[in-house]
Image (cartoon, rainbow, N blue to C red; front, side, top):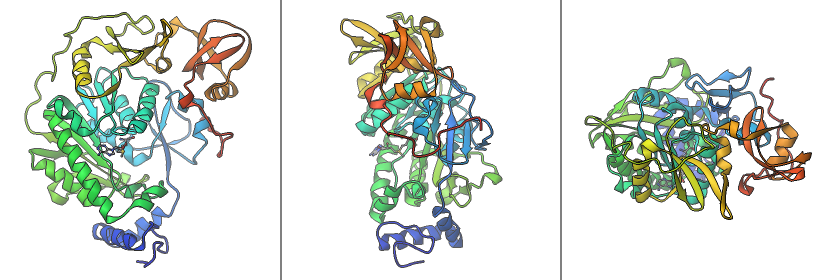
Length: 465
Ligand code: SAM
Protein backbone atom coordinates (compact mmCIF):
# COMPACT_ATOMS: atom_id res chain seq x y z
CA UNK A 1 0.00 0.00 0.00
CA UNK A 2 1.17 3.51 -0.69
CA UNK A 3 2.18 5.81 2.10
CA UNK A 4 0.58 8.87 0.60
CA UNK A 5 -3.13 9.58 0.22
CA UNK A 6 -2.97 8.36 -3.39
CA UNK A 7 -1.97 4.78 -4.04
CA UNK A 8 -0.90 3.72 -7.57
CA UNK A 9 -4.56 3.29 -8.42
CA UNK A 10 -5.62 4.56 -5.10
CA UNK A 11 -8.37 5.21 -2.70
CA UNK A 12 -7.33 8.85 -2.75
CA UNK A 13 -8.89 10.03 0.44
CA UNK A 14 -7.90 13.24 2.16
CA UNK A 15 -5.49 12.25 4.92
CA UNK A 16 -2.66 9.73 4.28
CA UNK A 17 -3.01 8.05 7.71
CA UNK A 18 -6.73 7.67 7.11
CA UNK A 19 -5.97 6.12 3.74
CA UNK A 20 -3.75 3.42 5.22
CA UNK A 21 -6.25 2.77 8.03
CA UNK A 22 -8.99 2.27 5.47
CA UNK A 23 -6.93 0.06 3.20
CA UNK A 24 -5.93 -2.11 6.17
CA UNK A 25 -9.60 -2.56 7.10
CA UNK A 26 -10.52 -3.46 3.55
CA UNK A 27 -7.61 -5.88 3.26
CA UNK A 28 -8.92 -7.64 6.35
CA UNK A 29 -12.22 -8.20 4.54
CA UNK A 30 -10.95 -8.89 1.05
CA UNK A 31 -7.34 -10.11 1.33
CA UNK A 32 -5.46 -9.51 -1.91
CA UNK A 33 -8.72 -8.71 -3.68
CA UNK A 34 -8.32 -5.24 -2.25
CA UNK A 35 -6.13 -4.40 -5.27
CA UNK A 36 -9.06 -5.19 -7.56
CA UNK A 37 -11.26 -2.94 -5.44
CA UNK A 38 -8.74 -0.12 -5.65
CA UNK A 39 -8.60 -0.47 -9.42
CA UNK A 40 -12.39 -0.41 -9.63
CA UNK A 41 -12.53 2.71 -7.48
CA UNK A 42 -10.29 4.48 -9.98
CA UNK A 43 -12.76 3.89 -12.84
CA UNK A 44 -15.88 5.86 -13.76
CA UNK A 45 -19.06 4.98 -11.85
CA UNK A 46 -21.73 3.00 -13.66
CA UNK A 47 -24.83 5.00 -14.68
CA UNK A 48 -28.29 3.57 -14.13
CA UNK A 49 -31.91 4.63 -13.81
CA UNK A 50 -35.02 3.05 -12.33
CA UNK A 51 -38.24 3.54 -14.26
CA UNK A 52 -41.60 4.46 -12.76
CA UNK A 53 -43.75 1.75 -14.32
CA UNK A 54 -46.94 3.72 -13.68
CA UNK A 55 -45.75 6.47 -15.99
CA UNK A 56 -43.32 5.17 -18.57
CA UNK A 57 -42.37 1.91 -20.27
CA UNK A 58 -38.66 2.82 -20.07
CA UNK A 59 -35.78 3.31 -22.49
CA UNK A 60 -35.15 1.10 -25.52
CA UNK A 61 -31.98 -0.87 -26.12
CA UNK A 62 -30.50 -0.61 -22.65
CA UNK A 63 -29.13 -3.37 -20.49
CA UNK A 64 -31.35 -4.35 -17.57
CA UNK A 65 -30.11 -4.28 -13.99
CA UNK A 66 -30.55 -8.02 -13.31
CA UNK A 67 -31.78 -7.68 -9.72
CA UNK A 68 -34.32 -4.94 -10.41
CA UNK A 69 -37.22 -5.32 -12.84
CA UNK A 70 -37.32 -1.57 -13.58
CA UNK A 71 -33.57 -0.88 -13.51
CA UNK A 72 -31.58 0.02 -16.65
CA UNK A 73 -27.87 0.60 -17.17
CA UNK A 74 -26.99 3.49 -19.46
CA UNK A 75 -23.87 3.57 -21.63
CA UNK A 76 -23.02 7.12 -20.52
CA UNK A 77 -24.30 9.84 -18.22
CA UNK A 78 -26.57 12.14 -20.24
CA UNK A 79 -27.83 15.61 -19.23
CA UNK A 80 -30.67 14.27 -17.07
CA UNK A 81 -31.63 17.80 -15.99
CA UNK A 82 -32.72 18.57 -19.54
CA UNK A 83 -35.04 15.58 -19.78
CA UNK A 84 -38.67 16.57 -19.00
CA UNK A 85 -39.44 12.91 -18.21
CA UNK A 86 -37.12 13.11 -15.20
CA UNK A 87 -39.02 16.16 -13.91
CA UNK A 88 -42.31 14.35 -14.50
CA UNK A 89 -41.29 11.46 -12.22
CA UNK A 90 -41.06 8.96 -15.07
CA UNK A 91 -37.75 7.63 -13.72
CA UNK A 92 -35.23 8.10 -10.93
CA UNK A 93 -31.47 8.22 -11.39
CA UNK A 94 -30.15 5.62 -8.97
CA UNK A 95 -27.02 3.58 -8.72
CA UNK A 96 -27.59 -0.11 -9.36
CA UNK A 97 -26.42 -1.71 -6.10
CA UNK A 98 -29.06 0.22 -4.13
CA UNK A 99 -31.71 -1.40 -6.29
CA UNK A 100 -30.99 -4.67 -4.47
CA UNK A 101 -33.67 -3.39 -2.11
CA UNK A 102 -36.07 -5.07 -4.53
CA UNK A 103 -34.81 -8.55 -3.65
CA UNK A 104 -35.08 -7.77 0.06
CA UNK A 105 -38.68 -6.57 -0.30
CA UNK A 106 -39.59 -9.65 -2.33
CA UNK A 107 -37.96 -11.90 0.28
CA UNK A 108 -39.94 -10.15 3.03
CA UNK A 109 -43.16 -11.58 1.56
CA UNK A 110 -44.87 -8.20 2.20
CA UNK A 111 -44.97 -6.83 -1.34
CA UNK A 112 -48.53 -7.90 -2.06
CA UNK A 113 -50.05 -7.09 1.31
CA UNK A 114 -51.68 -3.84 2.42
CA UNK A 115 -49.28 -2.82 5.12
CA UNK A 116 -47.96 0.20 6.99
CA UNK A 117 -44.32 0.82 6.05
CA UNK A 118 -41.76 3.31 7.31
CA UNK A 119 -38.62 4.49 5.53
CA UNK A 120 -36.81 6.13 8.43
CA UNK A 121 -33.83 7.78 6.66
CA UNK A 122 -35.47 8.51 3.36
CA UNK A 123 -34.02 11.57 1.57
CA UNK A 124 -33.58 12.11 -1.29
CA UNK A 125 -36.02 9.31 -1.97
CA UNK A 126 -34.28 6.58 -3.96
CA UNK A 127 -35.44 3.78 -1.67
CA UNK A 128 -38.86 5.36 -1.00
CA UNK A 129 -39.73 5.74 -4.69
CA UNK A 130 -38.55 2.18 -5.23
CA UNK A 131 -40.66 0.96 -2.29
CA UNK A 132 -43.64 2.77 -3.82
CA UNK A 133 -43.21 0.74 -6.98
CA UNK A 134 -42.68 -2.54 -5.13
CA UNK A 135 -45.33 -2.38 -2.40
CA UNK A 136 -49.08 -2.70 -2.84
CA UNK A 137 -50.74 0.56 -3.99
CA UNK A 138 -52.88 0.48 -0.82
CA UNK A 139 -49.84 0.26 1.44
CA UNK A 140 -49.21 3.37 3.51
CA UNK A 141 -45.58 4.41 3.19
CA UNK A 142 -44.24 6.99 5.62
CA UNK A 143 -40.97 8.50 4.41
CA UNK A 144 -39.06 10.30 7.13
CA UNK A 145 -35.99 12.52 6.95
CA UNK A 146 -34.22 14.26 9.81
CA UNK A 147 -32.79 17.14 7.76
CA UNK A 148 -35.40 19.69 6.61
CA UNK A 149 -33.48 20.71 3.47
CA UNK A 150 -33.22 17.11 2.40
CA UNK A 151 -36.84 16.46 3.37
CA UNK A 152 -37.85 19.14 0.83
CA UNK A 153 -36.17 17.17 -1.94
CA UNK A 154 -37.67 13.92 -0.63
CA UNK A 155 -41.14 15.45 -0.76
CA UNK A 156 -40.61 16.73 -4.29
CA UNK A 157 -39.42 13.32 -5.47
CA UNK A 158 -42.31 11.49 -3.84
CA UNK A 159 -44.90 13.90 -5.19
CA UNK A 160 -43.42 13.48 -8.66
CA UNK A 161 -43.48 9.68 -8.30
CA UNK A 162 -47.23 10.13 -7.87
CA UNK A 163 -48.33 7.32 -5.53
CA UNK A 164 -51.41 7.93 -3.38
CA UNK A 165 -50.68 6.54 0.06
CA UNK A 166 -47.47 8.33 0.89
CA UNK A 167 -46.57 10.57 3.80
CA UNK A 168 -43.49 12.71 4.35
CA UNK A 169 -42.35 13.46 7.87
CA UNK A 170 -39.33 15.43 9.06
CA UNK A 171 -38.05 14.21 12.42
CA UNK A 172 -35.21 12.59 14.30
CA UNK A 173 -35.75 8.85 14.79
CA UNK A 174 -36.51 9.47 18.51
CA UNK A 175 -39.78 11.13 17.54
CA UNK A 176 -40.96 7.72 16.37
CA UNK A 177 -40.80 6.50 19.96
CA UNK A 178 -44.50 7.45 20.12
CA UNK A 179 -45.29 4.94 17.39
CA UNK A 180 -44.32 1.67 19.02
CA UNK A 181 -45.17 -1.54 17.14
CA UNK A 182 -47.05 0.27 14.40
CA UNK A 183 -45.24 -0.67 11.18
CA UNK A 184 -45.13 -3.99 9.34
CA UNK A 185 -42.01 -3.01 7.42
CA UNK A 186 -39.30 -0.54 8.40
CA UNK A 187 -36.42 0.42 6.12
CA UNK A 188 -33.31 2.00 7.61
CA UNK A 189 -30.94 3.17 4.90
CA UNK A 190 -28.65 4.69 7.43
CA UNK A 191 -26.26 7.63 7.30
CA UNK A 192 -22.83 6.00 7.04
CA UNK A 193 -19.15 6.56 6.40
CA UNK A 194 -19.87 6.28 2.67
CA UNK A 195 -16.96 4.12 1.48
CA UNK A 196 -19.13 2.55 -1.18
CA UNK A 197 -19.69 5.98 -2.73
CA UNK A 198 -16.01 6.90 -3.11
CA UNK A 199 -16.21 6.50 -6.88
CA UNK A 200 -19.18 8.85 -7.18
CA UNK A 201 -18.68 11.32 -4.39
CA UNK A 202 -15.46 13.26 -3.78
CA UNK A 203 -16.84 14.58 -0.49
CA UNK A 204 -17.25 11.02 0.84
CA UNK A 205 -13.51 10.49 0.24
CA UNK A 206 -12.55 13.80 1.77
CA UNK A 207 -14.45 13.31 4.99
CA UNK A 208 -13.51 9.67 5.68
CA UNK A 209 -11.58 9.00 8.89
CA UNK A 210 -11.78 6.25 11.53
CA UNK A 211 -13.61 8.64 13.88
CA UNK A 212 -16.37 9.02 11.29
CA UNK A 213 -16.99 5.28 11.42
CA UNK A 214 -17.47 5.50 15.20
CA UNK A 215 -19.78 8.50 14.85
CA UNK A 216 -21.87 6.81 12.16
CA UNK A 217 -22.14 3.55 14.07
CA UNK A 218 -23.53 5.46 17.07
CA UNK A 219 -26.14 7.16 14.82
CA UNK A 220 -27.01 3.83 13.23
CA UNK A 221 -27.43 2.16 16.60
CA UNK A 222 -29.77 4.94 17.68
CA UNK A 223 -31.80 4.87 14.45
CA UNK A 224 -32.09 1.07 14.59
CA UNK A 225 -33.15 1.12 18.21
CA UNK A 226 -36.11 3.35 17.35
CA UNK A 227 -36.83 1.55 14.11
CA UNK A 228 -36.98 -1.78 15.94
CA UNK A 229 -39.41 -0.42 18.51
CA UNK A 230 -41.70 0.88 15.73
CA UNK A 231 -41.81 -2.56 14.18
CA UNK A 232 -44.72 -4.84 14.93
CA UNK A 233 -44.05 -8.32 16.24
CA UNK A 234 -43.39 -10.48 13.20
CA UNK A 235 -42.59 -7.38 11.13
CA UNK A 236 -39.63 -7.01 8.78
CA UNK A 237 -36.74 -4.59 8.89
CA UNK A 238 -34.42 -3.85 5.99
CA UNK A 239 -31.09 -2.33 6.98
CA UNK A 240 -28.73 -0.93 4.39
CA UNK A 241 -25.67 1.29 4.14
CA UNK A 242 -23.24 2.31 1.44
CA UNK A 243 -20.15 1.43 3.41
CA UNK A 244 -18.06 -1.69 4.01
CA UNK A 245 -17.34 -1.14 7.70
CA UNK A 246 -18.20 -4.22 9.78
CA UNK A 247 -18.99 -2.00 12.75
CA UNK A 248 -21.59 -0.16 10.67
CA UNK A 249 -23.02 -3.29 9.06
CA UNK A 250 -22.83 -6.80 10.51
CA UNK A 251 -22.33 -5.53 14.07
CA UNK A 252 -25.49 -3.38 13.85
CA UNK A 253 -27.52 -6.31 12.56
CA UNK A 254 -26.09 -8.60 15.24
CA UNK A 255 -27.33 -6.14 17.89
CA UNK A 256 -30.86 -6.53 16.52
CA UNK A 257 -30.49 -10.29 16.59
CA UNK A 258 -29.64 -9.97 20.26
CA UNK A 259 -33.05 -8.30 20.59
CA UNK A 260 -34.82 -11.32 19.12
CA UNK A 261 -34.53 -10.67 15.40
CA UNK A 262 -33.23 -13.12 12.86
CA UNK A 263 -31.89 -12.49 9.40
CA UNK A 264 -33.66 -13.79 6.33
CA UNK A 265 -31.66 -14.61 3.21
CA UNK A 266 -31.91 -12.08 0.39
CA UNK A 267 -31.74 -14.19 -2.75
CA UNK A 268 -28.91 -13.35 -5.17
CA UNK A 269 -27.55 -15.14 -8.22
CA UNK A 270 -23.80 -15.92 -8.45
CA UNK A 271 -23.50 -14.03 -11.75
CA UNK A 272 -24.59 -10.79 -10.05
CA UNK A 273 -21.27 -10.83 -8.21
CA UNK A 274 -22.56 -10.08 -4.71
CA UNK A 275 -20.76 -11.27 -1.61
CA UNK A 276 -22.78 -13.09 1.07
CA UNK A 277 -21.60 -12.24 4.53
CA UNK A 278 -22.03 -14.43 7.61
CA UNK A 279 -19.88 -12.47 10.07
CA UNK A 280 -21.41 -12.17 13.53
CA UNK A 281 -23.74 -15.04 12.59
CA UNK A 282 -25.86 -12.96 10.24
CA UNK A 283 -26.92 -13.59 6.64
CA UNK A 284 -26.63 -10.46 4.49
CA UNK A 285 -25.28 -9.17 1.20
CA UNK A 286 -22.35 -6.90 0.36
CA UNK A 287 -21.60 -5.27 -2.98
CA UNK A 288 -18.09 -4.29 -4.05
CA UNK A 289 -17.61 -2.48 -7.35
CA UNK A 290 -14.84 -4.80 -8.57
CA UNK A 291 -17.36 -7.67 -8.45
CA UNK A 292 -20.76 -6.05 -8.98
CA UNK A 293 -21.84 -3.61 -11.67
CA UNK A 294 -22.69 -0.86 -9.19
CA UNK A 295 -21.26 0.95 -6.19
CA UNK A 296 -20.45 -0.40 -2.72
CA UNK A 297 -23.25 -1.33 -0.32
CA UNK A 298 -24.53 -3.63 2.38
CA UNK A 299 -28.09 -4.89 2.89
CA UNK A 300 -29.78 -7.20 5.40
CA UNK A 301 -33.36 -8.32 6.01
CA UNK A 302 -34.50 -9.16 9.54
CA UNK A 303 -37.69 -10.48 11.00
CA UNK A 304 -38.78 -9.47 14.48
CA UNK A 305 -39.92 -12.32 16.69
CA UNK A 306 -43.66 -12.79 17.22
CA UNK A 307 -46.79 -13.12 15.13
CA UNK A 308 -48.13 -10.39 12.88
CA UNK A 309 -51.87 -10.63 13.38
CA UNK A 310 -54.53 -8.22 12.11
CA UNK A 311 -53.80 -4.59 11.37
CA UNK A 312 -51.74 -2.38 13.63
CA UNK A 313 -54.40 0.32 13.66
CA UNK A 314 -58.12 -0.18 13.11
CA UNK A 315 -58.90 0.80 9.56
CA UNK A 316 -62.00 2.34 8.09
CA UNK A 317 -62.75 4.16 11.30
CA UNK A 318 -63.23 7.61 9.87
CA UNK A 319 -66.07 9.09 7.86
CA UNK A 320 -65.28 10.42 4.42
CA UNK A 321 -65.14 14.15 5.04
CA UNK A 322 -64.65 15.64 1.62
CA UNK A 323 -65.02 15.07 -2.07
CA UNK A 324 -62.06 15.14 -4.39
CA UNK A 325 -63.47 15.62 -7.88
CA UNK A 326 -60.02 16.04 -9.46
CA UNK A 327 -59.15 12.47 -8.48
CA UNK A 328 -60.43 9.20 -9.88
CA UNK A 329 -63.01 7.57 -7.63
CA UNK A 330 -60.58 4.65 -7.29
CA UNK A 331 -60.84 4.93 -3.50
CA UNK A 332 -62.82 6.87 -0.89
CA UNK A 333 -60.91 10.10 -0.32
CA UNK A 334 -60.75 12.20 2.81
CA UNK A 335 -59.58 15.77 2.33
CA UNK A 336 -57.49 17.30 5.08
CA UNK A 337 -55.99 20.77 5.29
CA UNK A 338 -52.40 21.44 6.33
CA UNK A 339 -50.50 24.73 5.91
CA UNK A 340 -52.79 26.20 3.23
CA UNK A 341 -52.71 22.96 1.29
CA UNK A 342 -55.28 20.22 0.94
CA UNK A 343 -54.26 16.57 0.87
CA UNK A 344 -56.44 13.67 -0.20
CA UNK A 345 -56.08 10.62 1.98
CA UNK A 346 -57.34 7.15 1.29
CA UNK A 347 -60.14 6.99 3.88
CA UNK A 348 -59.09 3.53 5.01
CA UNK A 349 -55.84 5.03 6.31
CA UNK A 350 -57.32 8.13 7.96
CA UNK A 351 -57.02 6.87 11.52
CA UNK A 352 -53.41 5.86 11.01
CA UNK A 353 -52.54 9.11 9.26
CA UNK A 354 -54.02 11.06 12.19
CA UNK A 355 -52.04 8.98 14.64
CA UNK A 356 -48.80 9.63 12.78
CA UNK A 357 -49.54 13.33 12.33
CA UNK A 358 -50.13 13.75 16.03
CA UNK A 359 -46.82 12.02 16.87
CA UNK A 360 -44.36 13.32 14.26
CA UNK A 361 -43.93 16.62 12.33
CA UNK A 362 -45.70 15.83 9.08
CA UNK A 363 -45.17 17.70 5.83
CA UNK A 364 -47.36 15.78 3.43
CA UNK A 365 -50.12 13.18 3.79
CA UNK A 366 -51.57 11.40 0.80
CA UNK A 367 -52.12 13.08 -2.56
CA UNK A 368 -51.19 16.79 -2.66
CA UNK A 369 -54.56 17.99 -3.90
CA UNK A 370 -55.03 21.76 -3.77
CA UNK A 371 -53.30 24.91 -2.63
CA UNK A 372 -54.94 28.06 -1.41
CA UNK A 373 -55.10 30.99 -3.81
CA UNK A 374 -56.81 33.92 -2.10
CA UNK A 375 -60.21 32.65 -1.04
CA UNK A 376 -60.28 29.70 -3.45
CA UNK A 377 -58.38 26.48 -3.97
CA UNK A 378 -56.49 25.60 -7.13
CA UNK A 379 -54.83 22.32 -8.16
CA UNK A 380 -51.69 21.65 -6.17
CA UNK A 381 -48.46 21.53 -8.23
CA UNK A 382 -48.00 17.96 -6.96
CA UNK A 383 -51.48 16.92 -8.14
CA UNK A 384 -50.31 17.05 -11.76
CA UNK A 385 -48.13 13.95 -11.09
CA UNK A 386 -50.67 11.94 -9.11
CA UNK A 387 -51.47 8.51 -10.48
CA UNK A 388 -55.05 9.01 -9.32
CA UNK A 389 -55.47 12.32 -11.16
CA UNK A 390 -58.65 12.31 -13.24
CA UNK A 391 -57.12 13.65 -16.44
CA UNK A 392 -60.54 13.92 -18.08
CA UNK A 393 -61.21 16.90 -15.78
CA UNK A 394 -58.43 18.94 -17.36
CA UNK A 395 -57.57 20.16 -20.82
CA UNK A 396 -54.25 18.54 -21.84
CA UNK A 397 -51.62 20.68 -23.57
CA UNK A 398 -48.90 18.52 -25.15
CA UNK A 399 -45.48 20.18 -25.16
CA UNK A 400 -42.48 19.42 -27.33
CA UNK A 401 -38.98 19.28 -25.83
CA UNK A 402 -38.23 23.00 -26.34
CA UNK A 403 -41.55 24.06 -24.84
CA UNK A 404 -41.17 21.69 -21.90
CA UNK A 405 -37.70 23.05 -21.11
CA UNK A 406 -39.06 26.61 -21.35
CA UNK A 407 -41.73 25.66 -18.85
CA UNK A 408 -39.25 23.89 -16.55
CA UNK A 409 -37.19 27.07 -16.50
CA UNK A 410 -40.29 28.84 -15.20
CA UNK A 411 -40.87 30.87 -18.38
CA UNK A 412 -44.16 31.52 -20.18
CA UNK A 413 -44.87 29.80 -23.50
CA UNK A 414 -45.79 32.00 -26.46
CA UNK A 415 -48.95 30.93 -28.21
CA UNK A 416 -52.15 32.40 -29.58
CA UNK A 417 -55.47 32.36 -27.84
CA UNK A 418 -54.47 30.62 -24.59
CA UNK A 419 -57.39 30.52 -22.17
CA UNK A 420 -58.28 28.81 -18.93
CA UNK A 421 -56.20 26.27 -17.09
CA UNK A 422 -54.51 23.28 -18.65
CA UNK A 423 -52.35 20.30 -17.84
CA UNK A 424 -49.01 20.38 -19.66
CA UNK A 425 -47.86 16.94 -20.80
CA UNK A 426 -44.64 15.68 -22.31
CA UNK A 427 -44.80 12.42 -24.27
CA UNK A 428 -48.24 12.06 -22.72
CA UNK A 429 -46.83 12.16 -19.16
CA UNK A 430 -48.32 15.02 -17.06
CA UNK A 431 -45.80 17.70 -16.18
CA UNK A 432 -47.60 20.61 -14.54
CA UNK A 433 -50.22 23.32 -14.70
CA UNK A 434 -50.52 26.08 -17.29
CA UNK A 435 -52.71 29.15 -17.12
CA UNK A 436 -53.84 30.82 -20.36
CA UNK A 437 -53.18 34.56 -20.73
CA UNK A 438 -54.13 35.26 -24.37
CA UNK A 439 -50.84 35.26 -26.27
CA UNK A 440 -49.01 33.07 -23.75
CA UNK A 441 -49.31 30.19 -21.32
CA UNK A 442 -48.10 31.15 -17.88
CA UNK A 443 -46.99 28.23 -15.79
CA UNK A 444 -47.12 27.26 -12.18
CA UNK A 445 -43.92 25.22 -12.09
CA UNK A 446 -42.58 25.84 -8.56
CA UNK A 447 -39.57 28.18 -8.47
CA UNK A 448 -37.59 25.72 -6.34
CA UNK A 449 -37.89 23.03 -9.03
CA UNK A 450 -36.74 25.17 -11.95
CA UNK A 451 -33.87 24.25 -14.26
CA UNK A 452 -31.18 26.81 -13.57
CA UNK A 453 -28.21 25.61 -15.64
CA UNK A 454 -27.76 27.58 -18.85
CA UNK A 455 -27.13 24.63 -21.12
CA UNK A 456 -26.59 20.87 -20.93
CA UNK A 457 -23.08 19.84 -19.95
CA UNK A 458 -23.51 16.36 -21.48
CA UNK A 459 -25.40 14.92 -24.47
CA UNK A 460 -29.19 15.12 -24.21
CA UNK A 461 -30.99 11.89 -23.40
CA UNK A 462 -32.08 9.84 -26.36
CA UNK A 463 -34.18 7.04 -24.97
CA UNK A 464 -34.90 5.22 -28.19
CA UNK A 465 -31.38 5.32 -29.70
N1 SAM B 1 -32.65 6.27 1.66
C1 SAM B 1 -32.16 7.43 0.92
C2 SAM B 1 -32.31 7.18 -0.55
O1 SAM B 1 -32.37 6.01 -0.97
O2 SAM B 1 -32.38 8.15 -1.30
C3 SAM B 1 -30.74 7.76 1.30
C4 SAM B 1 -30.57 7.96 2.77
S1 SAM B 1 -28.98 8.53 3.23
C5 SAM B 1 -28.01 7.13 3.04
C6 SAM B 1 -29.15 8.69 4.94
C7 SAM B 1 -30.07 9.78 5.39
O3 SAM B 1 -30.09 9.78 6.82
C8 SAM B 1 -29.66 11.18 4.96
O4 SAM B 1 -30.71 11.79 4.25
C9 SAM B 1 -29.38 11.90 6.26
O5 SAM B 1 -29.79 13.26 6.26
C10 SAM B 1 -30.16 11.11 7.27
N2 SAM B 1 -29.60 11.23 8.64
C11 SAM B 1 -28.51 11.94 9.02
N3 SAM B 1 -28.31 11.84 10.33
C12 SAM B 1 -29.28 11.06 10.81
C13 SAM B 1 -29.63 10.59 12.11
N4 SAM B 1 -28.90 10.90 13.16
N5 SAM B 1 -30.72 9.81 12.22
C14 SAM B 1 -31.45 9.50 11.14
N6 SAM B 1 -31.18 9.91 9.88
C15 SAM B 1 -30.10 10.68 9.74
